[in-house]
Amino acid sequence: MEWTKEERYRPYSAMSKTEESRLLHVVDHAPWRQHYHIQPPTGLLNDPNGFCFYNGQYHLFYQWFPYGAVHGLKHWYHTTSTNLVLWQGQGVAIEPEESFESHGAYSGSGIVVDEQLYLLYTGNERDSNWERTPNQCLAIMKADGSIEKHPSPVVEGSPPGYTEHVRDPKVWQENDQYYFVIGAQREDITGCALLYSSTDLLDWTLVGEINTSLDNFGYMWECPDYFELDGHGVLLFCPQGLEAKGDAYRNIFQSGYILGSKLNVSDGSMSHGPFRELDHGFDFYAPQTTTCPDGRRILIGWMGLPDRSVPTERDEWAHCLTIPRELTISGERLLQNPVAELKTQRGASTHFSDTTTRTFGHVYEAYVTFTPGETSSTYGINMRTSESEQTVLTYEMATKQLTLDRSLSGEIPATSEGTTRALNLTEHCHTLHVFMDHSSVEIFVNGGEAVFTSRIFPSEGATGFNTFTNDTNVTIQGTQWEIF
Ligand code: FRU
Image (cartoon, rainbow, N blue to C red; front, side, top):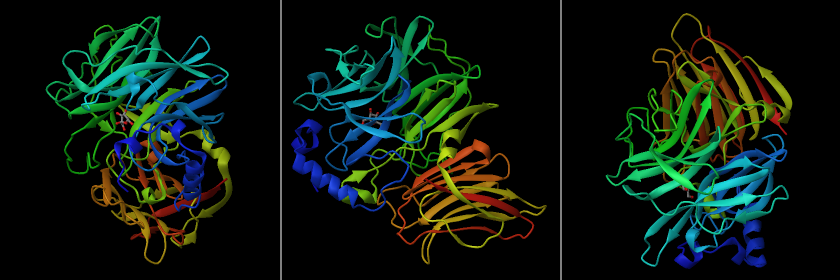
């Protein structure tokens, strides 16, 4: 279907009841709807936004276009949860209706101040010549759930030296000051993150760029996020325009982090190690973090990528978010593991220690340990198998390479870069922690050293699972749980 500009830029409030019922009916009968992942009721979901614990529960918003699976007028859709696992849709939180956000309420973040949730986001404004102005906007949510927009942007347009691509503020507080990092493009068409500061969340001053050693690292950085963990500074961001290098940077755009000293908020300096990708699967982008009341740092990402399509578009919906991951630090790296709360959803379990094919269905968690022998061997798991389908994770001890192959995973998205993703591990593959849903798989490797996140679109009958190895000296132990 071809969308006209009018159709693409229609707000949710213009949707008739008939239209909504039709869309809901189509989506309701669509294949590949997820069981425990956050997905849009209709239309297209992208970045997670405004992730915060506020007023006794977690609030998470996402970029949403309600009318179909295209990147149209972006709204913020609101979901809440008391345990990070079961989420309740709350409807639209921010609908772009002001001139300063005429072409979308783009990504942003939240911070709790004086018992209110302050939501900072990018108002994407376009004029009649389609010239874009990025405005940083504020909306304030009260405990009763009502949201009021600040009448004017808190930062208008791009600062001198930067193009129209300035967006996605991520806010935090340090001492008596507020700060946000924001993705930007310099006039020489290289990407960076800018740092702003404020004493009241209304009046913002540009401190400058976050001074990294990555001066020429892609043409735009989207969705930056800065936080401190265990005395380290961590900057997450999504550079666009990096070329694939071996197994690295294989998706259209990247999402990763640098870890180092704490950011010096007075001049933006930060010494840091190399850029590392957060995920090694086919579908991961624009993650956002928050802290839990108990201090854990939690990350949720978009299980999708800009400019990349999925087969569910035929049924008027697209994309979902990842499960929440807890971040910890080990040496100079981030570890990512599924949040402990997910265990509350475990149902009946099955243990296995052989390579027999078992029927695990579409929705489950599995934890598999491998203890290799002396000789170099190959081992791994086959998931969502049927006579003709399989999603395969293979580990080669000789090269320490772990490869995810979705070439036989069912319907392959029309646009993606190849059918395998691989990574060389720092130590032999000893654990695989799998979260399977109807149309996705997330695999946590070696206690969080690496994650492979991917959408897959298998047929209904692809329910099998088996481990494999070419060496009888490899010991395999596994448990599978149904997920409520
Ligand atoms: C990332 C992104 C953000 C932008 C949003 C718009 O996926 O392009 O930079 O704010 O999506 O939906």
